[in-house]
Image (cartoon, rainbow, N blue to C red; front, top):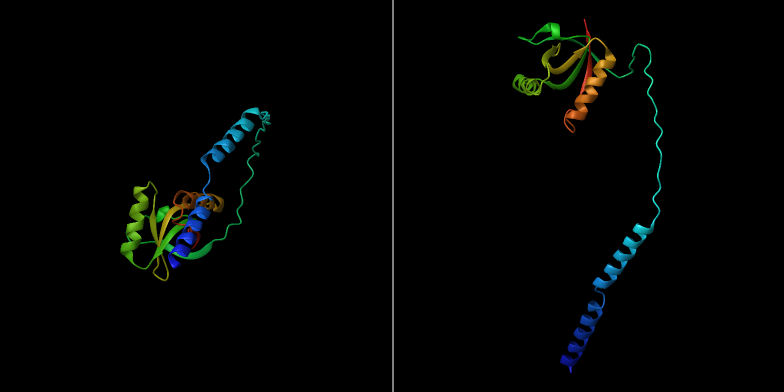
Length: 161
């Protein structure tokens, strides 16, 4: 008797699960309907306006980007003339080996990298240096975009004399 109940229950399960299968013909019919709507739908033509950009007449650029002010000098063996008022810093290290490794990587990528050292002995890896704050901000943003997700914490150092 138990075998008959077990056989009946399994037969019901097979029929119940077998009827839930999607039919290939249903997918085919839906696909054909979508294709039919696609071919009969009208095509809208949108005209674009041409807008000419007007460049301002040599207005001085200003920037309200935050900076960190430090007394910084070129590290030993570095060219101090490459450090200007605003510098883009991509790394700070106590370990000289790490600082020099990052500097070499950036030189190999075409940057004119230089190491600066602050009063606490931290080595700053500087990839660009400018007299204009807005230029430094543009350079920092370009580096963040080029090397994303690396160097997202790049910052601007304002050199104190």
